[in-house]
Length: 112
Length: 113
Image (cartoon, rainbow over all chains, first blue to last red; front, side, top):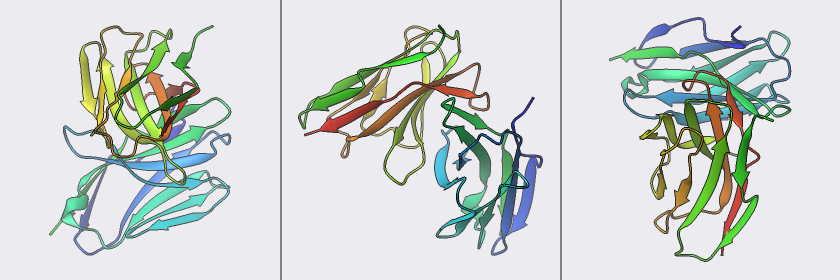
């Protein structure tokens, strides 16, 4: 049973527009969430994180929103750039069990 | 008891010395990972390995090296080329790949003096 779900396998956005990547989770014990970006043939790169006690964290063009009651988080990229084209993974940390659970990823394609 | 062990818990080294952090798992997992955690930052991936004798660079591999000669062991060497080695290092393993749940060891806090 997948505890972290990224239901959209892919997303296409035009350059300059907003990209919204979504992630849902089922385990209320997760207390920290992270987003990673991965280019083909490279390892994942950490992007941004959010603690479960917050509802928003912003870093440059990247903002993560957390809705605990809905068990939903989203990553907003504004404005989107062609170099943002990659696979984005949502991950959830459970400090009680020291586990990190990744979603299956969403491939973002930003076209010029 | 199945799990992941990291040793030592605290490690002090002089600048310019290489140091090797140990990570062992008896979960029969194929994949193993090394992360680094700095204050205010998320977990950043250093290296990962999905099979014996094979490993890939992560986010911040420069100044680090690894080996995977045995399924259960994935030691990380912090070399003198790593510009800012003082950090908390976490090792993890998962059944097959990145998207399987990763189980973490207790971590090693490395301080370079």
